[in-house]
Image (cartoon, rainbow, N blue to C red; front, top):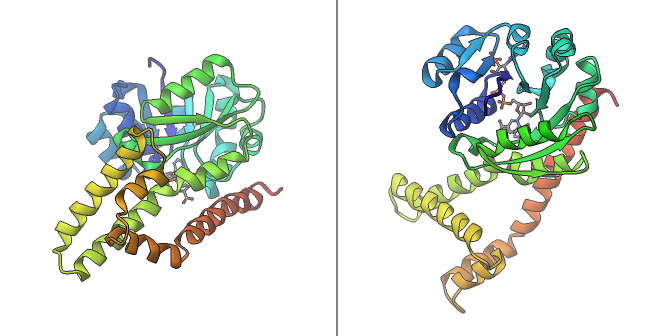
Length: 274
Ligand SMILES: NC(=O)C1=CN([C@@H]2O[C@H](COP(=O)(O)OP(=O)(O)OC[C@H]3O[C@@H](n4cnc5c(N)ncnc54)[C@H](OP(=O)(O)O)[C@@H]3O)[C@@H](O)[C@H]2O)C=CC1
Ligand SMILES: O=C(O)[C@@H]1CCC=N1
């Protein structure tokens, strides 16, 4: 990938994608990241060898792809400040912000931009990311291929044809690493209550999560069948799963994901004003 990529914002999500891109073979000097504080950039520069800048416009003016990776709440201010530079150079603009639609960001950038909205997740850092992508009508086939290539360097890519579906992607994968981390926390705590040392419980729970996800990915059986295969009639797993069903764990998960998608929609209304 010989394109110059600039990340506006160098926090958790940008550094996860950048780390994954470098591991996948992208030349560090082709990547620039910006943030207001030199102290935050210094550690990224020394750890990853990328170029850093505190000046968003200077960084964007060099780029074929500008990835907007700041918090949604400051996106307007950042975009309005970048609008002249983006208007002049017309890079492909990718936003990874939750709940901010492409048309609003395009308008803040001055309009008529090729925009890809992307909902990535933090496992991008280890090449196991999952990203949902949506392109506006100005994105060319080559730019679409470039966005795919960029995010496939750090995981899998699923394109959606309708932009609101990105709120569903946020619920299913963008926010979802946190659901699994919560499960790991709870399993470690319960393992300790049952008498295991914390580090032993943590290692066993993590390996089991990895093993189950790998089986689900590689098997031709669906998750329900794989679950059934662990459950001997009258055995231990059946008792555990029955407890989860009685406690309405499925409903809790469904409600949590609805709340996640609704929050993305509400953020969009709050921040775009429509
Ligand atoms: N974290 C996640 O799992 C995911 C996040 N996202 C989206 O990614 C975006 C970033 O989230 P996340 O990485 O978690 O947030 P962080 O707060 O970790 O990162 C935001 C970055 O933007 C920098 N920043 C602040 N103001 C400016 C500015 N004016 N110009 C340039 N950079 C600036 C911050 O610097 P400083 O620290 O100095 O303020 C920081 O480096 C959000 O829009 C979020 O919705 C999407 C999917 C998953
Ligand atoms: O919590 C958030 O708002 C961001 C978006 C998806 C994951 N983290």
